[in-house]
Image 1 (tube, one colour):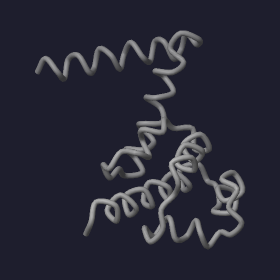
Image 2 (image 1 turned 60 degrees about the vertical axis):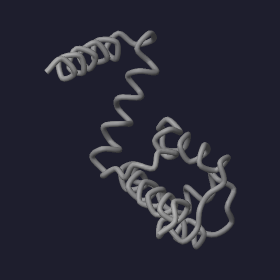
Image 3 (image 1 turned 30 degrees about the vertical axis):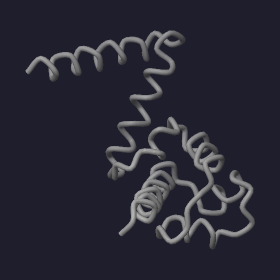
Image 4 (image 1 turned 180 degrees about the vertical axis):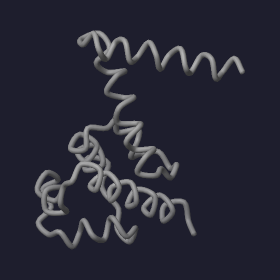
Length: 117
């Protein structure tokens, strides 16, 4: 399988997991992306069709994740995606929310201890 085809499959799985995680429909996503039919979203989720760079960025915004999550060729489970959503939220909001700042500090200590091990 070519890299482009592999990326489409991985992207499709991430989109499907994120939709399940956020309890949104294909219609909700299609509407946000300006796509007329849910069939196109179904094709994306099956890996037979890709998304434009712009729509990948819009999908990331829709799901509340950093675009890097969707652009990454790494396959992620629903749990991985849920963790990424929380981590990125804590990173982005560490200076605006004291609870998220404390969570960020805890994550930072955990990462540091893992790297030291």
